[in-house]
Length: 216
Image 1 (tube, rainbow, N blue to C red):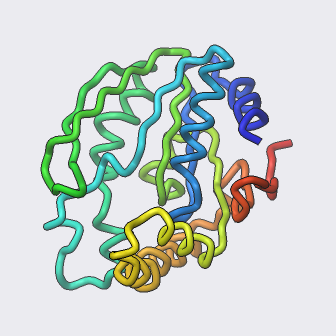
Image 2 (cartoon, rainbow, N blue to C red; image 1 turned 90 degrees about the horizontal axis):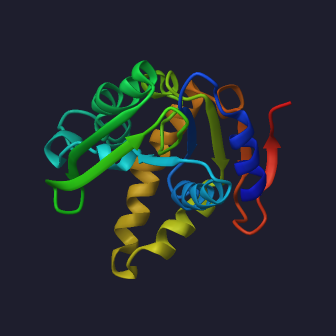
Image 3 (cartoon, rainbow, N blue to C red; image 1 turned 45 degrees about the vertical axis):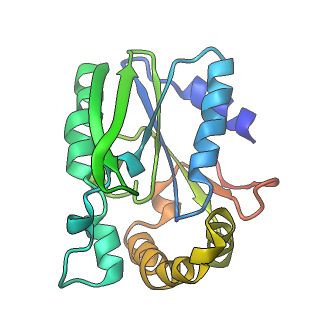
């Protein structure tokens, strides 16, 4: 599947500038792993690849946990600085056709501005944009090809519990049930994957993804 995706992306390439490919899905759907494997496959095909992860554009804790709105709203509306990602990265790529920039981003665990990211985009680059909520117009406007990984909520919870410390399992379960998944339901009701994604993969079984939607 990774080879098939990479081949399609490589052949899809724009002639007038970098190609932006979105890899999206709900939390724990496999976005980051899929992006990493797709990057490796594209590099083997001889393509210049730049990965951009939405998680590097988190807002500080004081903004993410603003009082007066519900937990799902905090996640959906407050967690990510979409304006910064658009203004400093995605828009220059689209307008100029290239980008060479170093940014200081938020270290989410430490809640400090200490994470450094460097983005180098050339005219023939393929950008893999990895993150939740990519169907939102603030981001989708810049995406040329959108890949959505579909997983059941129960599978997402199981994966989240498996990859994090068992000591935090109760808190992780609470966050998924009261914050992340309710926010995703609201978001996908507003921006259905069937309408907004070019490629949809059922990723419930990581070892056997199934094609739900594929470009003609």
